[in-house]
Amino acid sequence: AAALVPALIHVLAMTAGAALLAALGLMLSVYVKQLENFAGTMNFVIFPMFFISPALYPLWKLEESGAVWLLRLAEFNPFTHAVEAMRFAMYGQLNALSWAVVLGCGAIFFALALWGYDPQRGFIRQKGGG
Image 1: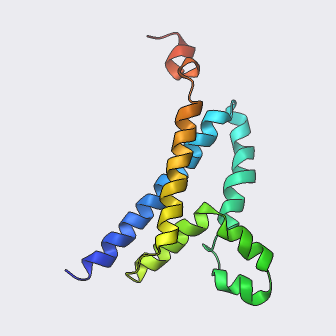
Image 2: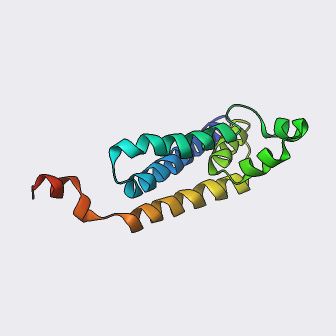
């Protein structure tokens, strides 16, 4: 039973990270008017967030190598905190700051998506259905 707690925390961290990225994608899709422009948005928003995060390399390596400016930029990246929440969860630990950032940014992104949603642009309205 004791081994289930870290696994449960890890599943919750992965779910929170997925919800964060889903809310970000939903928010971007509300404000990007044409499907063709969404690929450009992916290239300029999602990919830099991924590459600046510690998904590929640990944050302490940035500081050790002298790239302090990149470390500071990574600290403002919500995806960094999603990865850190998952990393800590694998060791059965909670990183309160990472959880707060992931859940807070996810809620903000989702609220912005709801705020920008226009039912007049919906699929059913475009097709003339009811």
